Length: 135
Image (tube, rainbow, N blue to C red; front, side, top):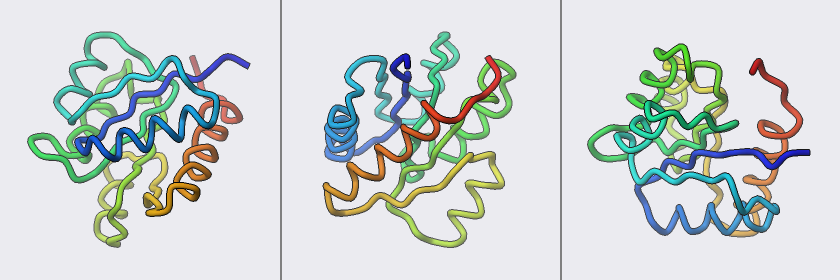
């Protein structure tokens, strides 16, 4: 199976490092683009990258996850890309807002690294390997 391409969008360098470590532990070392914020993520997508999966944080300065979701879902070139919210917020309002804006899934980041690694493995295995979407 071809390695999935992933766009990781998170403004917290520590969370980015944890996610990259988790992806590496899952055997995904290439095909990962990192955007340190929503503005950069949208610029990458408008610039032509088409990841198999977007892992998106919700709470970011300048352009939050909801605005990124709006940009992704409003562009015919990107609207079919699965977007998994990977965030620390467990607030019902945040969960509902993300789904209203077009999130494919909502996952709360586990605080324990072993659990975080298992969560990232489950997400990538399903959305990038098992799931089939139109090309």
